[in-house]
Image (cartoon, rainbow, N blue to C red; front, side, top):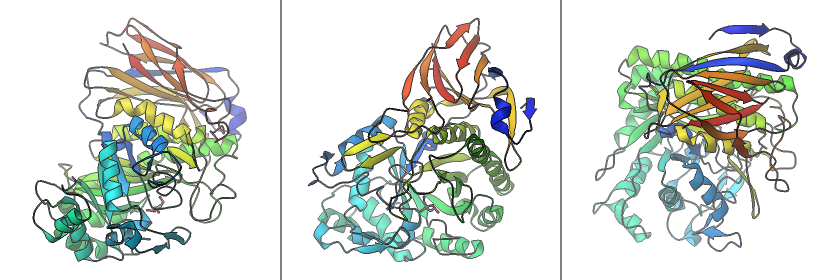
Length: 514
Ligand code: AHR
């Protein structure tokens, strides 16, 4: 990328307000697409944490809150509209303390447990395997089961796989039938442990590599169900973990996970989700974009061992992590979600699209009421977050062909020595040949005129939607749920293969060329 201008002042807010309008140029190579953007890049994650499951997804059939078989109707409909491709469950850290047999059978007989990872909340196991897999069926998404390696046994995990996927006259299939489900579910994705370097057992990679080999051996393919096994991978910059796993496990795994959070650090305050200044905002953009470098470095290691790219990189946790909202339960990771979070989503997704030769899935953390959620709920109320709207706008890119593009724009230097381009973009061509372009103007003060060259593209108009708001810290509340929402976007004109867009400050658009 060519840097037209580098503003190196620490007082970035003052610097970027010097000019009223900026310019950027994008060239989309519409005939050069070879790589499909797997829909799984738009994956979600639901953990037994705070009110993600209980109150968020599930209220039970007897609840006064409107529900479909126990799933909240409002949340279910919002997720259906999002075309969730894959849902990871039951954790996270929770997964390595979860004993699946506690979550089957008559609800009144299910034992309770303490959710040690997340505030010591009492978990009554009323949402278990049946409730999760039935939800996935209703949403039309792939389930991604995260298995317990940290505190569970090989036998326990092997039996869970049998319970979910065996259609034969097997002991676990018969137990499932006794519990009301005749036909096996299809379960594709199986995580063999989670964060095994931390909450999943505090292991060394060498030890975990052997455990992965052992546990995964007994996770069988029953009756036409083919498991896609994912090893617990590195956190952020831990390249040694990836190296050891590739060396010692290699193609015994289908995928190797990676976790990367946009977070200020793991000790002390992480900063407020809603109270921040421009410098904090630009720092956040720089930190979220650093994931590109992290992905590249993990991919380079994987390439050394696996040139044919048989093992996928699976980014099964990503997103922003701020301080919990004041007054909420400690350990429940409930945070608000502003337009800043929406930019973290759009910039991250733009990056993910580029690496889908190796990166085959990403699961934002988490779907409801936890960290960078799509949805927040309170009693019978629900709000869609700015991040939800990015996922909604971007769903046109699911399973579309990635179109390479060149981007020239201004950059700024931000805290922690990062250089931040003020424009981010991605483009794809869907199965019907329709081209979609998403562009984010990160600049918090200045509009940008973006020229998009579209050599060889015969389009006459561009229609789409925009996400913006008066302030970068704006968010939706239960009292004012529509403060930040999508609106039709009309400031795009095509003339002789050149698209001109007037992009307001701090805005994200997705356009369809027609
Ligand atoms: O998403 C919250 C937690 O973050 C997950 O449980 C864990 O895997 C990670 O540390």
